[in-house]
Length: 163
Image (tube, helix red, strand yellow):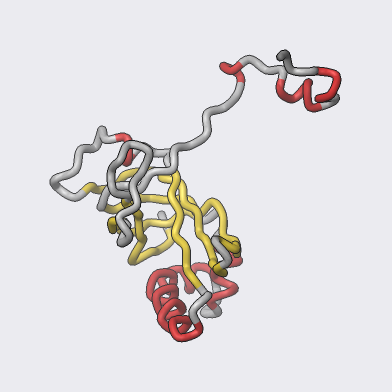
């Protein structure tokens, strides 16, 4: 059954493009441990599986230093790749721990952003270039990716404005 172009209306003009003219989406891959220059792409609140979270999305701008055992040609360290971090606010007993983790992670940006208020830091950091250490952790529930490998998540630390 063919696609009814008339039903698509104006959307048909949007979709009628050569694949070579459509930009590729970045890959979402956890960079390997090391030091990176990142761009803070998005800071937003989300509901994920009925849980409140603040999600920060990053894109890799440059690889400054990989840990010794890592391969600089690995696709997980390619500039342009993206990853995100989520901070969960669904457990009242853990909110202070979550806020403490965010304080530790983002306090290095406070002077450059002109505020010590965490909400204001989060508001102002979108679009900012930062330098930080990236570490990895494996999924604690054993979830796997599309290739059957245990999922790996990236975490940032010691974030400062990039120069």
